[in-house]
Length: 382
Image 1 (cartoon, rainbow, N blue to C red):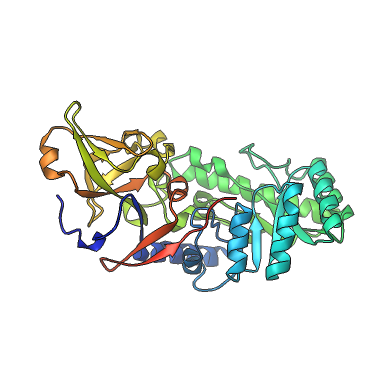
Image 2: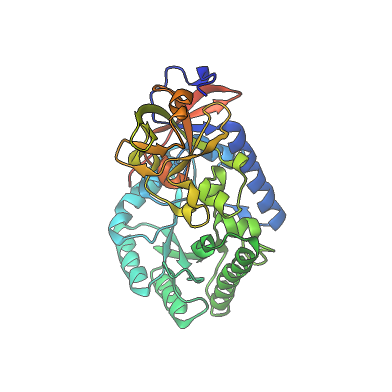
């Protein structure tokens, strides 16, 4: 079972492996999907956090992107991206840093608000800096994580507060996010929810336009709703990100196939626990994360499925079921697995949730044509 692992010679573990061919296919599939839907793709790079992955996502262009932290905004702006949406509601205290990013790079940052008082405070902070920012208003399409009621007086109040802060703030449009699409494992309810998301955004934009507010951007997004939407009439752009890598959470919901999962964690067998029995890997909570979102629909996923290091084929039903900080425990049916995977053997683990797994690493080892060809750095922090 150790197989030919020469492709990983000299690599310390745990290690984040990125399959370039799978990444290319995933990126191309989403670009074609968005073109067919007639919308602009604004890829969400909170998972990738990589200039190199961003170039693949956009087909070597530097179009609009989405980020979740100002550290990401700084990183991509310094690398030449000029249209950057910071998708988390912005705190007024962060505007000075955001202003520096714009002034130093000539990038345009777009922010999100969902509260009238927040809009007032952001406007005041921008005025004190003599800074200019575009702002989108987030509407709640049912997840209830954040967002104002669609097409409502509360929405109008936020828009009025933004308009009152001109020229420091400019209303750029409407944003929604159907994160609750992950509650389903069948396409039909996701397709229905995609329509709810679309209507929330489009009706809100129309509501504000009828009251004199411009809404050039109508932005929606999650990988499932973009992939399963019947149409996106009235939407101008979509934000999706996990489609680039996919993971067991996506697989468990029928969003991807096993062959679409582009990231895995290279790990070493460092122990045989006879009281079990189980294999011990050097990939634990920090290397894999403790997210088990896939387990709702794939309870056998554990913290990740254990695979052959070369073929990435699952090794029977082996999974990491217990994690400590640096230890991953993999129960095995019997001790014959100790001969199949002796101490020092390599395996690859498919992540339960790639967003959190990737966050632990400073770079990707890029696998291309059976060889590790390069390293792609990642940014991090906030």
